[in-house]
Amino acid sequence: MHMINDDSNIYSILEFINTPEELRQLPENKLNKLCNELRQFLLNSVSKSSGHFASGLGVVELTVALHYVYNTPFDYLIWDVGHQSYPHKILTGRKKRIYSIRQRNGLHPFPCRDESKYDVLSVGHSSTSISAGLGLAIAAEREMLNRHTVCIIGDGALTAGMAFEAINHAGTVKSTNLLIILNDNDMSISENVGALHTSSCKTKKKKYLNITSNIKKLCRNIFINHEENNFTIAMELFKNLGFNCIGPIDGHNVYKLIHNLRNIRNTKKGPQFLHIITKKGYGYKPAEKDPIKWHAVPKFNLNSGIIPTNQHNIKKNITYSEVFGEWLCQIATQDNKIIGITPAMREGSGMSKFSKKYPKQYFDVAIAEQHAVTFAAGLAIAGYKPVVAIYSTFLQRAYDQFIHDIAIQKLPVLFAIDRGGIVGADGQTHQGAFDLSYLRCIPNTIIMTPSDAYECKLMLNTGYLYQKGPSIVRYPKEYTTNNNIPNDNNIKQLYSIPLNKGIIRHHGQHIAILNFGALLKAAYNVALQLNATLVDMRFVKPLDETLIKNLAKNHQALITLEENAITGGAGSGVNEILMRNNKLLIPILNIGLPDFFIQQGSRTEILSELGLDSSGIYKKIMDWIIMQ
Image 1 (spheres, rainbow, N blue to C red):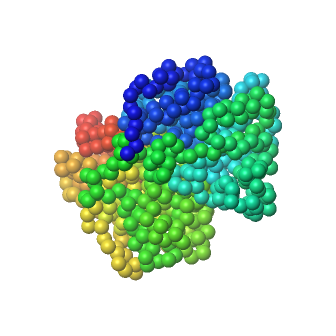
Image 2 (image 1 turned 135 degrees about the vertical axis):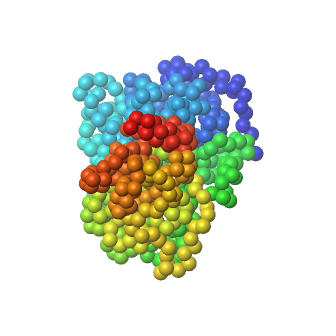
Image 3 (image 1 turned 30 degrees about the vertical axis):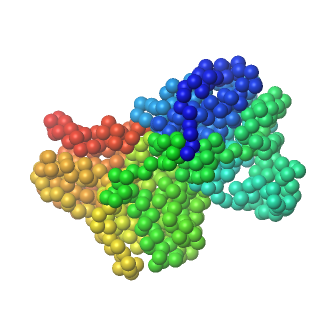
């Protein structure tokens, strides 16, 4: 048992701290107690509200030290990645609202400029801090402001190429007050991977370490005696790129942190690098033992230390991510050339089982989406069958690579795009609202949108078999019915679907609803109410043009339905077909995601609010009919 005291009296100091200005009035000898209270408050609040958990526990002392030493909000703090920011939010006037985090109309899950003057940069995706921080630091220097900019980068964010691009630039600018803090907790969302990580791990048992770096061989044959010199490869990298380096130091000792931060702020000029060592989940034993599991949590009982499972869905339903993971394992039993690739999203993408069962066919390339896509291109050229499992929101970061390195060369790479559409609690930076729009315009590409688990597996099979270019299976963060999923025991006789062929699910009159993806169940209820024809279009590209023409000829109006931005989405493709065939121009209503960034909330809440549940879809159609 992990007994947790929920008595509000334990917050004897934190109760009176609502701003960093109030924090800075405390005597230093009170800060250790404040850190304990802040960690306790974080434990109690997240266990009751759900949210990102382990990362925030690891930066309590750092957050207190930063706001104590730096004159925030005049001095700038940028958190990277943003799920480390819960303690920061608590100390910057949002303590009473922290229970609403990630909920509809509640606090944003990550730092957000619209929410607080202490949030300098709105974030969600990783590895943006150093670029933005350098811009802010140069601007402050030109305005002759004695402002300090601090970028806190950790949880794997330093594995992304964008961070290294910014470091390379920042090291050449010697007149700025820029500090980069590496929060080295040995983790990201999954474990950190890559040569930089394995090289910069603490080497107390080894006196020498020879490595070859791909960045101008900066770290070749470096002498390391960690116990004597407190030296790491990461620090050598920063040093050679022009930074003054300090550390590594204990990131859970608030007084050591304050001492070093004060020294940097008061005496140092130019780009600085501070390496701190923390433990993800620090202060809560279950999270310390399994920080991946406790990275983000639902509501749970602190005393039991057990994360509840969704018992209602265990037998009857399955997530699309799980469908993908099971399919990948099944194919791998018969094809040792299939390669699974993920940019640091093993658990979320459903690849945990595959990574353990087929480790030689699995690659986690870290938070490096651009590299993931072009890495897959190389494998495809060599005759392998790469499958890139990636969230919709993160594929945005590799758009050029998809076009330049995959589509132009017609390489048979299968993309399993997870979190398409509304993802819910992670908010505007993570909604998968745009992928159909930005992918539909790329030649040589096929895009499929499954409506349930059965269709998802058929489409994965279809994409796996397709050899004329890249294929995409795009699905939401959602449960789906676990019925009649085909069991493909023979890889040479896989169940698949014919290219660009939709299927009519319900025959009706007057109105035809053309559904793309997982809103089919809601659309079916509407079709019954309206006695409308319902079509599962299956393919966004290429569209079933013959079917669309026939529907236009035999109905008085068409409705397109998708969980993607209306602008440029699947419905736009249907419009284009009708425009090319002007004799078929009939009234058409496109239903999908609106033209604004969608904030956090549960998936059910957001779909209802946007009118994308059964009642909302029915109302949109009826209101439109009345206006005709």
